[in-house]
Image (cartoon, rainbow, N blue to C red; front, side, top):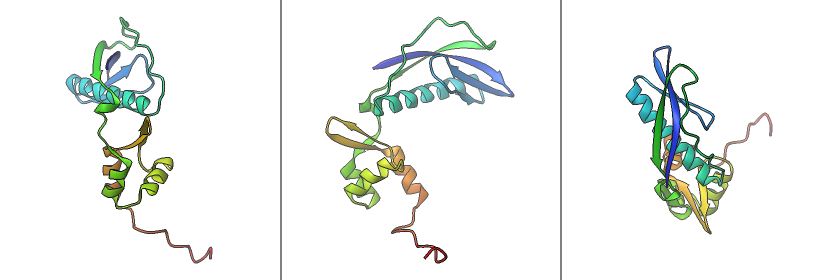
Length: 148
């Protein structure tokens, strides 16, 4: 589905800041063009997050006037759960070398980002890549001898 929202771009301290009218938050770039790209990335990520977590996506309000002395930018992104880079929980377990139940546990603990579509559970590839980059130590943490 295509989502269209407006952002205001203002220049602050040498950066171009893109602030959405219908969401909290902002993003920035070193140029207007980069701020526009970042606004599209920001909006895509926000919509994906809300879709994965069954959260409400606000109704877009359009035809805003600049509120901070900037200019209004219209940003459109085509987003659905199908566009999220993901693998099944089973495949995530293979990629990380853990059990399927450990994947469920890691999603619950916030160590991985996952979501359901019907009965199927998926894990985002971004969260798997981040976990691999962390290079967590294998096994259980050692007990502190002072506590033993």
